[in-house]
Each structure stands twice: as structure tokens, then as C-alpha cells.
Length: 263
Image (cartoon, rainbow, N blue to C red; front, side, top):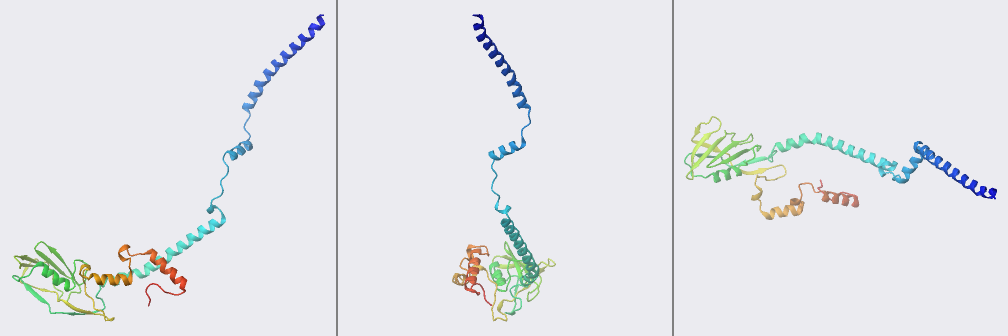
């Protein structure tokens, strides 16, 4: 009877000992796992799975690099050619512009007119006569320039002035010239000679030139020139890229020069 009761008791004791043994083993295993260093390869694979690699950029591939370097080389070549042309033609352009619009021409003038103190003249009449003689308000004008002051007009002959006179100021009072003062030595004058008026200007191309303000040009002439030369003249700043590209396309399509100026 005792033997039969001892068998289950022994089995129960054995199960308790096994369970206690397992409880002791699990913490040790966990501590061992926590202190083990992570596997680099496993960590890299985990990162790759979390952040998949992006496809390479176009310019990172060989065709992209070839295109990029070729474009940079062509742009550098364009800058070099533009610099050569700039250095070559800038002095010539400055010389042509500095010589004025009447360079290389023959001018035909009227007789010079002398004005004196007491003459019945107004500032507007003096300015109109100076403008017809080629004067303007620009100080770089080689013929001469003038400056309008309240009830006075300053006259400065240029290096291409017909008389080559000295600068002077004409003062007005009551519709007459009240005083003439030389701007060279600041002494009064009784009489001053005005530049003779330009009657005609003849060039080798049989052109007649005369300086005028834009407001003096008839609108019909302005519209006619714009219609023939550049219909978008007042819509751009002097560089119409769309029209240039269109002209280049037409020239390439026709295989010869069809657009632009011809010589």
C-alpha cells in the first residue's frame, strides 16, 4: 500500500525540481543574449530592408556624365569665342559711336547768325535754332549741347562746332535778351554768334542726315519702319530671342540664308 502511494509522490517531486531548474536557466539565457554584440551582417541586412537602395541618378551613370561634361565644354567654348569677339570689336564700336552720326559726311550750313542784347527772342526760339544746328542736351554731342535754366539758356559748342566759339549763357527778360555772359572768363558780351544751321548732310551713300527728337518723327514713318524691320520693336528690350530662333529654324530648313539682313 505505501509503495503504491510513493510512486505518484516521487513523480510530483521530480516535476517540481525540473520546473525550478528551468526557471534558473531562463534568466541566465536572457542575460547572455542581452550582452552578446549584434551581428554586423544581420544589422546591415535589416537596414537595407528598412531603407531599400535608390536607383542611381542619370548624371551618376556614364551617359549622363558624358552629356554633362560635353555641355560644360561647349559652354566654355562659347564663352571663349564671345570673349575674343568682345575684345576684337569693342574698340571699333566705341570709335564709331564716339565719332557721332555725322562722321565721314559733308555738311552744308547756312550763314551764322549773331544775336545781341536787346534782340526780341525767347528761350524756345534759341533752343529750336540750336537743335536745327545739331545741338542737343547730351554732353557727349560733338557738335555742341545746351542747358535750359529759368529765363536763361547755356550754350556749349563741341569740338565739331562750325565756329568753335566759347560757351556762353543768354539771359532773357520781357521776351528779349537782357544779358549775355561768357562762361569762359565770366565777362559780359554784347553779341554772340550762334552755330549756323545745318541745311544738308551728304554721305557716300547719298544719305541726308539730321538730328531730331523721336517726337519730331511722323507716326506714319515710325509705323512704316517698324512694320518693315521689326514688328515687335516696342515689346522687347532689343534682343528678341523667339524671333532669332525662328529665323535660325527657317535658315536651317531652307538650307540657305532666308532671314535677317543680307549683304
